[in-house]
View 1 (cartoon, rainbow, N blue to C red):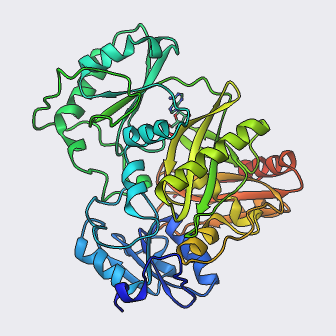
View 2 (cartoon, helix red, strand yellow; view 1 turned 90 degrees about the vertical axis):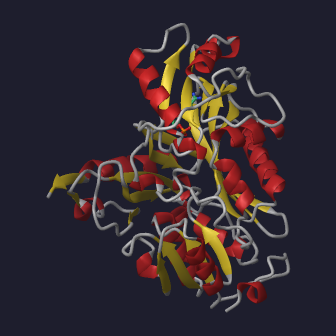
View 3 (cartoon, helix red, strand yellow; view 1 turned 120 degrees about the vertical axis):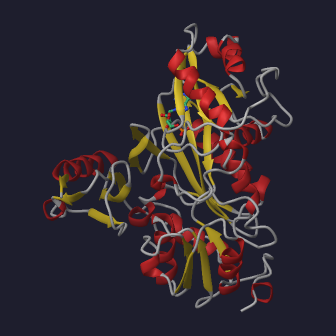
Length: 438
Ligand code: AMP
């Protein structure tokens, strides 16, 4: 099928089942999009480098290829009526000339922390102070800036390729950089890894952080360090963000539709462990003002891009107000609870939007608490049969062939009449589960 004749991308285009949805990436997010799409009668085509990736079992058509292989991506496009992706580290260029929902622009923006923070600021969305960093000297100067000193320090992050807290260093104001850290950073700056899209072929949970390595000089040493206020940020491999002294972390998951409407779920409260999402609660404890402000921020982002599909924005709540952390141009881990708690899940909403169908009901019929099941090396999960005795417990497993430490293997969601009850059930179930070495 020729995709140009099958999909115009206009708001009038409605794709009804059994049209085929092409998904770039076959991880758990692709799998859950595919599960919902299949229930609605759509066909599924998947491209992924791993033959037995989580979405492969649900696809009618599977292309085993690297994400950077333009010909393979074009092949996926030609097999599909609409193309979408499940993660942001798509190689620049592979989507050139191809229609996807969402489009490439939000993906390009959100894959780089500097670009996305700058966009947030230009839209009037509150962020922590931030500085582009291209050298150790710039970092040392930025750490002395009052905007950072006032906050007691900052977090240095790689602009691209970091995830789940990796590629980040917490730095205290007034304390020099250790020789070890300077060496590690210099090796990263010298490596040139950031000059290209290094993360393009690696799905976040599949890789380990790639700081280090060495080759090629880096030459931006003299650049003036400046907090980015407005206008275009210069390219930089690293970003220093002021420490946010947050009361809690929360996220908003919402979906943009071709007619410009935006439908969000209630903000979700998130708890991280070792930089990885551990628990999400279906209602974040926020004032009405903070709730409305965060929804308004997301609606502005959706309008800016003319965004079609599901996306998420992670916020800190600082002094009672939302502060933008980052956005994900795809369904999000904190939205998994919508599969069980909402009338239309984040994945169904994504399918509806990219196929030109109207929004479903994003209200929850139950309170819900989700806990991620993060793997251990060469281990199997034990205790499911005991946990599943708990009423209202839902178990999700992604079908990954091997468990590894830090890998997202599945999740549980506990449903109840209120959050306290749901959290007690989720904690009880989680306490019954354990990883057993094989
Ligand atoms: P990120 O990968 O940017 O989402 O960061 C991972 C986690 O590090 C966040 O969920 C926060 O718990 C923490 N964190 C990130 N940035 C900051 C910041 N500017 N201030 C305080 N904590 C932060």
